[in-house]
Image (cartoon, rainbow, N blue to C red; front, side, top):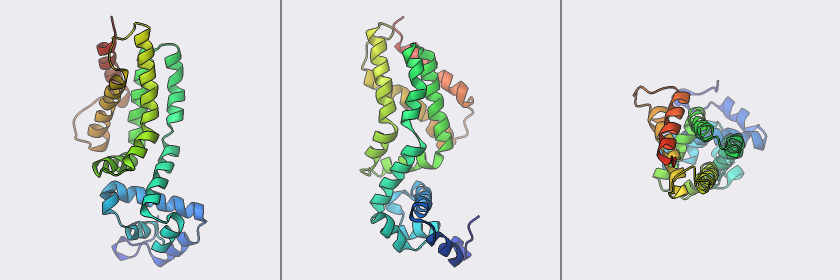
Length: 219
């Protein structure tokens, strides 16, 4: 556990230890501290001095390693992309798409969303803050963490429409509607924890998949 002085500020001993870390290790340390603070206070409400104190380093090292607070935000997005891999998510879903297993695809996609949100709650809070602040980097979060899966789902829906399995409708709007249903569950029961009783993730995923498929199937 990190040693701190009165008021929760890292002690000189901790600061010295963190300063002696390699640049890569120090950057990772700063990114973790920044994610926590940005998720609590937003980009505009968080000062680099606070990030330095939370990371146990001198503020000057943040500017030496990242140059600007915006570059630090970009580093967070890169870190998030390595922790929440859309490539892996799509690779896991592709076999269901190839054999036209509609129930399996939508069920497992919902499970992925729920489990990732539960595991990366701080990151998801940061994404919400980023969107609420209308920060230009919100688009990059979307491009990296949401858009690839959305496009995969849109292509699958279009294919199933061409095959006559799903009714005619805008596949982009349908893909967003399903993901919005999943994200609403995340907001209420993972991020905001409103106290409403709800089934476990697997049961909730099946409910979402069933509701959606019952609405889009052509027969």
